[in-house]
Image 1 (cartoon, helix red, strand yellow):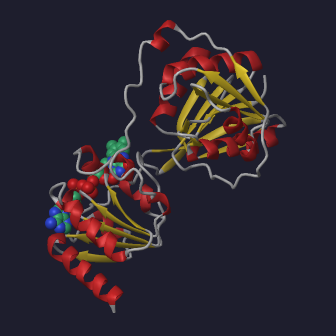
Image 2 (tube, rainbow, N blue to C red):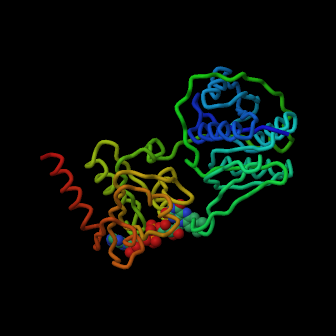
Image 3 (tube, rainbow, N blue to C red):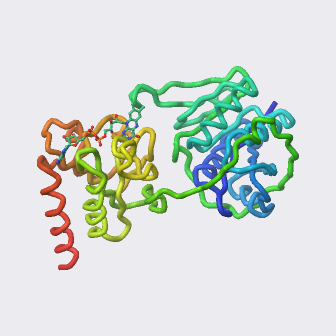
Length: 325
Ligand SMILES: Cc1cc2nc3c(=O)[nH]c(=O)nc-3n(C[C@H](O)[C@H](O)[C@H](O)COP(=O)(O)OP(=O)(O)OC[C@H]3O[C@@H](n4cnc5c(N)ncnc54)[C@H](O)[C@@H]3O)c2cc1C
């Protein structure tokens, strides 16, 4: 057996960024293992030239499978067939909920080992070793695989290089779907409010937590982000995303996104470890919290103790005045 197979998710003619990172990572690892990285694209009428573009990220070959996209089960069928027919040792995913679902199904189907939320993969004695943070990211566990291994990255764990412009040969594979794989149908695909904002590349992030008190509190934060102008955006904690105050696309932390802006302004955020792991690499952290003992003050560069409802409007005024002047 040999080789690494990567699932590449596409939507409206473009590949998902995390999938491209996974293809590049697989190519790097395959080089060290002396084998090849392949990619698989599942969908209805996937254009051959789109699939071939994955060659620019290091895929030596791309398999395309005609099946419904956006659902896990058909992809499990497709990947299980390709891995069995071609003898891939590993499957690699860029992360995300769909990746978790496919990876778990594939592991069960192939009797393979599976590791999720992986932040680093290395080669040791000719085999892959996956590293995964555990215990609130305070320790790293390592997974080695006796047979096949399924590795699912944490979102943004794998860097996306610029495409070399190379194209890969594309092979269309006919897959017979399992009866249960055709039971579900994707009825609607929607984008959440804020999903268009590229949080990960923002220079200034104004993040809100439960201390905002209600969903409308985010309007004030948006105003502050707008006052900063340029490449600024609003982000959120899981507590407020779970409460439905703000879209998941803007969640920062262990189960959200990892960011490193020039300025991270946290309003009404306690600074739980699961939030901290997603923003601790920010260049400057400013925290507003009415509780002087809030954990966020332990790692903030500047702490403001007080009521955000009084401080944020003043900050908006000050930033606007500064920008205007
Ligand atoms: C497996 C797991 C994964 C998780 N993943 C994530 C993740 O990805 N991201 C994430 O954020 N969390 C995550 N969490 C949840 C995390 O543990 C915390 O519960 C969450 O981050 C708390 O959000 P918060 O700071 O908004 O709310 P709280 O902890 O309730 O903090 C609210 C803060 O606001 C302050 N405050 C209240 N009113 C005001 C006011 N008027 N002015 C100023 N300050 C005020 C309070 O003093 C308090 O410090 C995860 C938890 C688990 C178990």
